[in-house]
Image 1: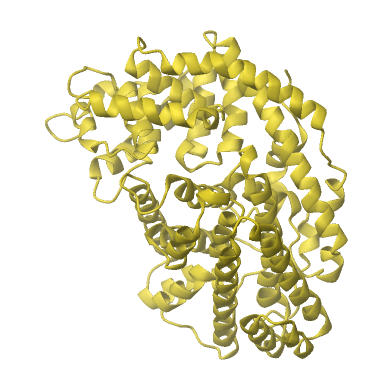
Image 2: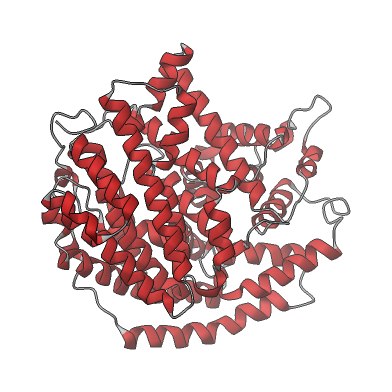
Length: 545
């Protein structure tokens, strides 16, 4: 009997779509990468000229910035984009008051400014309401405007009721208009309703947006070419990294040594590029992938496999973090413990030259916090205890494993993630707690559907129902409201002035966007069949040139 009460461990291998063998042959293609890089550098000049042209209309510049972001190439021009937005926002503070812009334009300006941290007031949307406080009937058929409003409303913070109303109103209108619009616009609307831009994975979105942009008759040939070539260029690097990660998993024989666990090779790497896809974070992604792979095995060891006695000894060994502790463990745990300790030592050796040994200290402490929380759940299960919901949730936020992924994501970032960033994250700031709430509650919601294994940490809906005397539907609705409030807290934390650098905030924010994609309808990490097309487009199939 496993410690979580399962009669036997579920065979997750039955759900596996891809293995390490599928990607272990991926190696570097330096010649192609260098050729693509040369072409990208030649094409960037054209875009930079468009951005910095002083004669350009401010709205057209913001539209260009939004397009660059959607196509996945804005990272090439971050300095120019920040400068242009600061200038437009600063010198034209009354840009909304002094111009009679339509709904599409106002919503676009609002979203892009907020996306880059500028505190634009939501009052800019009051002009689209009538004297009764309802949105004017005249915008009910403005498909482009409603789509822009829908996307903008996802950047709300707590207390902005006009944006709550805008989100509900635009969603309802878009659903009714979807079948009445052009094929291209209907496609955009359907895509946004399924996955809002603000909560999607940028790399996945850029692949789709490049195809949509190519269909526009007025597209800029040079910009389209840049987007395509750069996508393929970065994909070559991701393939190389995925190959390295796959060979590492194979060499350690993770699948055969821990057959009870989820071995999600490209799915783990999708999570990593969700955090940061840019070339400069190549080593950082490999580090996160390795840590995530081992933490997933540890998660399944506690969740579906080991006995309570084995887990007590494993928890104690992690707390001690010393190879002397390995003797107290059963053979399979000795192997897992040794791999974990060796991995952290190897990472420490890799980043020590950057003066970042402190990073490993914080990573170790986060792993210790994680296994303590796992052990607490194990103790509740084996004592037949159901804690108060708030106590359950406080602990279950940690057992998502999200914190160690966030901390690990900073390790390989170089100077942009110094010791102060680790200290702040260690103190669990508001943005960190918000991401943990989203992670756990989304997992609890999808767990109410038929799943191969229902773990204690995923039973939040059930516990809430019993404690508060509500139906499953009511509990899920309350959870969804809590999730929305957590997103609003994240939006608030990303607006200037911020407590952490934009670089760090983006890592935390981007990682939770992966959660929104993977757990929107079901647990695609456990049952990854629904991610097959994502994996193909990200790692296997380049864009035809």
